[in-house]
Length: 142
Image 1 (tube, helix red, strand yellow):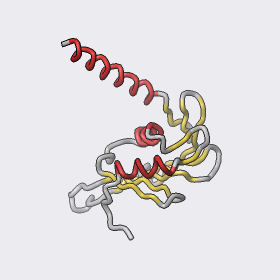
Image 2 (cartoon, helix red, strand yellow):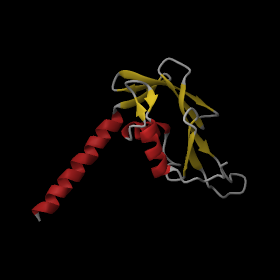
Image 3 (cartoon, one colour):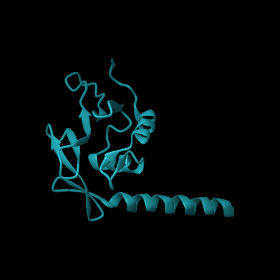
Image 4 (cartoon, one colour):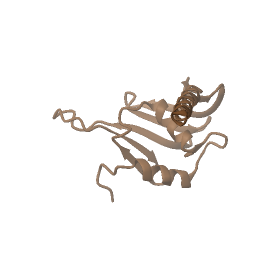
């Protein structure tokens, strides 16, 4: 019985820690803030269906997040999120992440250590691991 209580306390404190950590990230005035410290610049395009993340105060694009609308004209909603790392030539397509907002996706990339806010760079090794976890290869690729 004590083990169950310890597990429950651990799960609850873990959940609270994740919630507090997620609240540290803010999107304000085209800047991603971690706490009160600027980490990246961003721009929303295509009627908020695209989110472009840049190295802070530059036009050096790190990642493009897209909400892909599929089948809107037929009524078959097969939407998905497309995460494009052009410089690394990696594209991730995921239905699992389709309903997640931009803030959640940026936080996920930070939690998975794909993005390094101290240097404003992409960690390729962690990106490849992340792609292995989330890429569902929805559209045909070359």
